[in-house]
Length: 70
Image (cartoon, rainbow, N blue to C red; front, side, top):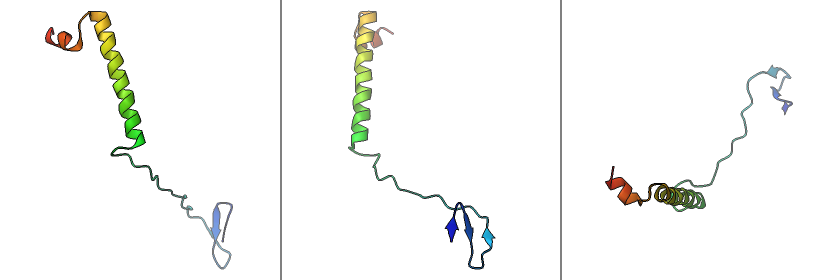
């Protein structure tokens, strides 16, 4: 019998061991062509594109021209 975070056995004695937590399985896959992967890829592509535009704005050269002049 369980109640209020402790367990008693058949004879009414108290068992003080820890009660196991309820476990659930996250069924959302994290590999392959999932919505999560596509959102992450799109966000990283947007950051890269804006960074390339900012680099060209501040240096006056494109990414390839800036890399060859290092």
